Amino acid sequence: MARHIKCGKLFTGLGEGAETGQTLVMDGETIRFAGPSADAPPPGPGDEVIDHSGHFVLPGLIDMHVHLSYGNAKTEEDIDLYAPLEFRALRGLEAAQRVLLAGFTTMADPTTTGHVSLAIRDAIDAGLFAGPRISTSGRQITNRQGLSDWYPSWIGVPETSIGVLCRDAAEGIAEIRLEVKDGVDFIKVAIDGDSMNPATDVLVAGYDQDEMSAMVREAHRLGKKVVVHARGAEGVLYSARAGADVIFHAAWMDDEGLEAVVENGCALCPTLSLVVNDIDFTRPGDGCYPDFPDAHKRELESACISLPKARAAGVKFMLGTDSGFAVTPYGEWHARELEHYVKYLGFSPVEALKCATVNNAEFVREEGRVGALEAGRLADILVVDGDPLADISVLQDRSRIREIIKGGETVKLEINKDARRLRSEFSYDLWSDVYTQERIGEIGMAPNLNQRAAE
Ligand SMILES: [Zn+2]
Image 1 (cartoon, rainbow, N blue to C red):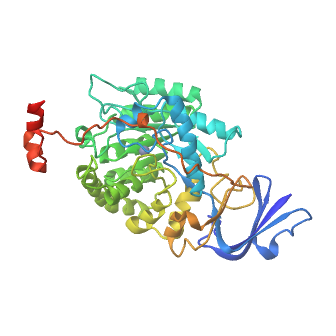
Image 2 (image 1 turned 90 degrees about the horizontal axis):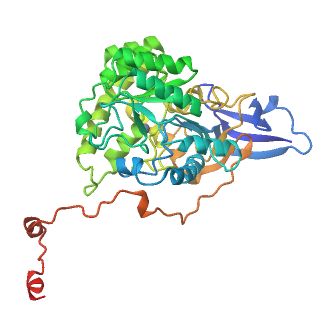
Image 3 (image 1 turned 45 degrees about the vertical axis):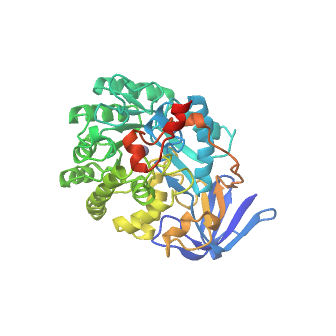
């Protein structure tokens, strides 16, 4: 039995816009036909005809940067320490379902803990649970000046961390071999740090050129692509010269770095969502206010200069969101990244949509089999009420989603609205202030000293 969709407008991901008068035909999990209704094979007896003639039909979206194991973390301790790995896997499965219900039928997880996201991927593959298609790395490979070595040296990087400390290329290569043995889809290296860590705010690279090149070479030799977290100029340059497949962030990329990116055909994935959400949503009273939003304002300013240059130079852009933090919760803001590309980086809505579909599809393990609507590809389809080419923000409105199809089947899935978070998932912040006599005086609270004396 085939399924025929009459499309109001069809964006295949391959042309330069959306077409009217189009029909999609699915046979099992694949697309048999996508094109003008006049040329479509007529529905046979028993075939299903779905009328989306009032709707916009596009490929299921792809998010390159979702951290399923993080649990909408408020702190780095939440990411690394509190919930047991087994709980993180169960919690992450629900997170993956939220991603799918936002219209993202495929995602990549660059950095997990233990084998959490591998287990989620496999459970969905095995048909045990509904969820998006997942490609995942293992723990991120990092050094003193990278991410994850963010606790004092007398604590170190714990086993349950999202990172593994590799102090040189030899340790990195040993870790790459282990992760490949354990079944990762790609390798993630954090070559530099984050604006929020004062110790790494200078954003020097944690590996030199030789070390980085050796690790990328080994990953490629073992058949795995490499994603690098690189915010600073040096990290971008070394990653690009090493031939990394995708560079995340790249806000402080300089002209030398851009040249190396172009020369080596690296893709960029800016991931503005964490930065912009932090600027837009963080409030006084949040622990990171105002330092982190201020740092992210500087990062966004720099990104608005460096990244449009890369777009003009013809660099391939992919699209991801860094979902999994309290400021980028699962299922909520994924499609807002497309709006950021239009608003901050000068992309047209068509270009932004291509980043989130055909471009991202080149990275994930279904390489070239998702991300576009043409005969032979997997039937992963999103149907919305509205025209994202006229207003890219309509994709953020989940009430406009009319149908999500994965592998030819309509996604029927509901998140438990009463699902709650456990106290034990988060680090303890018992008080937000230190209550000295002076501070109590400032706040204007009168301690009941008399009563205490009388007791
Ligand atoms: Zn990330």
